[in-house]
Image (tube, rainbow, N blue to C red; front, side, top):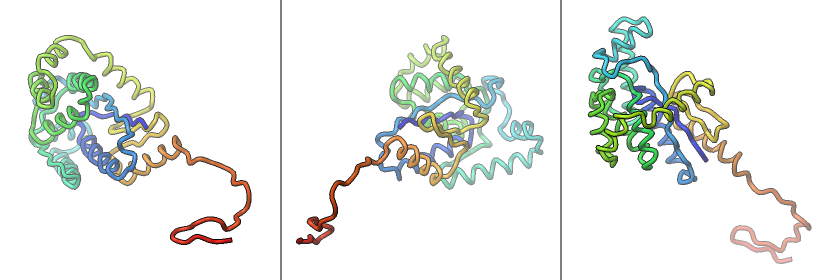
Length: 236
């Protein structure tokens, strides 16, 4: 089964959704047969690499909130993240453009390290206050999970993986995705938002059952009693 996850590494709900999906997978018997691909998505493609604006200020401006209301909203998200074992420090988050981060996530896919890079970027942004719009910061982060630093610098210095990022964003638009995280199962079913592990597990079960139906057969002959059930056998 194929699961595609549209996500932005500056999205607090996406990190929570990642943890909830991982919890769902732990309960799924066929988890080793799931192919997971992270798809690029940008919440604010117009953002500068490093804005110098706090996450509270961005939230207040976007939704017409007061700074106090924005701070309270972020505290609520942080509390929900804590329930999933995540520690958010949104007061330290450095808001900026994530396009280059997505390019390196695309690079990571060619090295089978996509999930590791996604995780590292999330933690760096929400817990450590790293600026994901800073190229040297990105290089350092991906090098920590096994991607060669010089290769990462070369990618960022050119246009490599730009088309892949834009393709993902364009596909999201075609699918009508307007927010992330968004989980797409076998290109047939979508789950929008950081739904509970229970909801995500139900989606996994349903799609698996549809793609792996139980065999159907016709029994010939009647039940003559010459069979065993449990720990007893009938004798005709």
